[in-house]
Amino acid sequence: MLDDMLDYTEQIRERPVWQPIPRHVREVFRKPLPRKPASLESVHATFLRDILPFAVGNAHPGFMGWVHGGGTPVGMLAEMLAAGLNANVGGRNQIPVEVERQVVRWVRELFHFPDTASGLFVTGTSMANLIAVLVARTAAAGVGVRRRGIADIGQRLVAYTSAGAHTCIAQAMDLAGLGSDALRIIPVNERHQIALGPLQERIAEDRSAGLRPFFVAATAGTVDTGAVDDLAAVGRIAEREKLWFHVDGAYGALAMLAPDIAPRLAGIERAASVAFDFHKWGQVPYDAGFVLVRYGEMHYQTFASPATYLRRESRGMAAGSPWPCDFGPDLSRGFRALKTWFTIQTYGAARLGAMISRTCALAQYLKESIEKEPALELLAPVALNIVCFRFRSERADEVNRNIVADLQESGLAAPSSTTVNGCLAIRAAIVNHRTNRSDIDALVRATLAFGSAYVERPSRTLRND
Ligand SMILES: Cc1ncc(COP(=O)(O)O)c(C=O)c1O
Image (cartoon, rainbow, N blue to C red):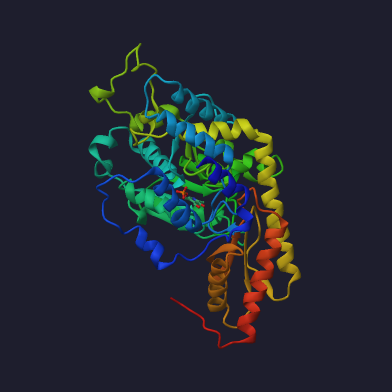
């Protein structure tokens, strides 16, 4: 199995990025509960035949959809070790908890946070953003909100983010019981950053309507275009208005590792909390989300529970409080820290930073290739590693939606799509450390070929389903 997976990563270029899944393969996964055992060999053979070839392909250098990291063999091996230990890192007096604490200290150092800051591995940034909203809710309403609920606050808490923010922030407001309508969506400027004037005006309006502004989420690397909000300016507004200043840095925050890109994140060191994923730009295998909170005590007060079966002792296995389960909703937790610790140690922070810089340079190369090509059009500035563009056409939305599907089904390259200023965009996020210029050239070539086919044969079927 180990050989198979090492061969898979070594020979990944010879495979299509993705391929459509035949009906008979889906049928394999509709069988009833197996009552009798099967040999490990036969189960593994099914994996090789019916699972491995039909994954989404984010390990492939031609994968540029959404924001998916590529993973590394180092992370894969560490994950095997973690599974072998079968560590439950909810707490208890064990070194796996120390490994997580070590990563928390590294993250504090990277973001210039104080020693009193707390951190926690979670599934992904959606969960990290939710935790940040919940800690901010405690900061605004007091720890009693945990028992009495938000109805008891007597004043509506409202929050702010930009139109470019990820929808999981609205979902966090919903799950925190504050309601997604209480998240004010502030327009963006021409660089797709949160517009500061409208932000301040909306805060003032809400205050005069008797509402209570409590939270602002800036984004370091928006999901659509990779824009980075002016974090220092948002931080100053938050300070003046006494709002919790959160940064959603799902993939962008790790640009702190890259000395040439980190200055674009200036101001992040003033945040009250930062959410990000090691499984995106950090190349740690899924999943490895992380939340960093400046006010560790507030974070603890938001989640710690007095349950007797979780009682702490000064010695034995129940020693070593506080535990990770005191900082989030999960009691059972895998050893996500190990694959992250292995990745950071084996490659070193400098090399990871160089990889991040290189993906940004590749995005600039793609931007220049698009600008040289009259048939293509750039749709947004390239702030980090995401490039939004389209093939010029009178039926641009229809044609580009189909080009994206053609590219994905061809197995040559796999961008995703989004909407930028009302236009359907082909969106390439260069996240994978394996991607190089030849993959960018292949994307441009294939886009032109598929786009030209629609120009030459306008009757070619355009599918909208
Ligand atoms: C800016 C931003 N925030 C949040 C998320 C959600 O992160 P996750 O998928 O790890 O929950 C993403 C995902 O791409 C993102 O780009």
